[in-house]
Image (cartoon, rainbow, N blue to C red; front, side, top):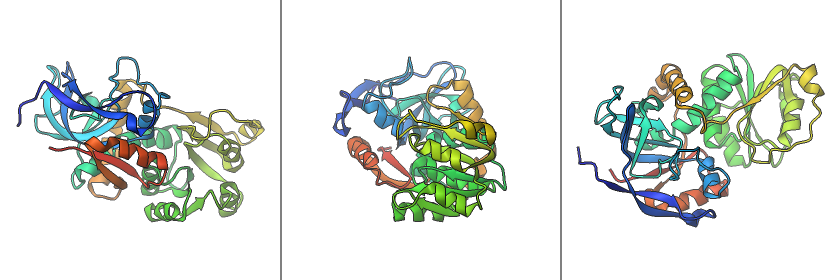
Length: 334
């Protein structure tokens, strides 16, 4: 194993603004403490919160590095004095509150998982953020069960492609919204019974017709804004709406009578600020319930494109174009 240098190249945010604000910088290599591990990064996923951080709209939690990046795959190269879950040289994936756009990153060992067998490094790097988001929101807060129906908004996104596959794998009927025929086709290929092009169809009308007026049991919504009243129209009695983002805004005008008459649960959560112990619990559940599906390639992260580490600005431009289907991943030299 190569010696660990004192400094590394990281992608920093020079100033808040467009993708061109992402620039390589020399930074100290992090030093793992106590139950942390240090990982030499081979690939790192791009996520919407990274874009928001670069724009100055989503600051990292207190005490977190200003280097962006929430997930990676790589090799354990050092361990804190109390770390014992992994060995040097182990291939891992990990969820972090920041720092993944770099040659090295440290993480609490409970927020890392062994790289699934039969997945490439690029595929593995695309797992943590979306799978750690989908599981607690769709299956725990949303309580999606086999035999139920779910609507996944943003079905062609990283979260959406993950949610469609997992919902289908655990026995649910899936509807999804997306913005082009190609994206809708991708959703159907992944397991959606019906994908709705929101630019050409009213998803509320389609869902009502497809469910015989019953509506869906669970809605996973990252859109917000004017989608929220429509969600209330098409949620079934005793249904659950889970809010994970607000791409169309946080302020809505809403008649709440349907919340009462349908006995709707409208909940939501964010992931990045949650404590290590919460993420450790999600990691444990994923390892038990989802890792076998990943290792069998029953569920596989959808990769839209890859970019070399030093072209992170181009990767961000790709994400902001909204032309992607699935995940965008940075690759690093080993």
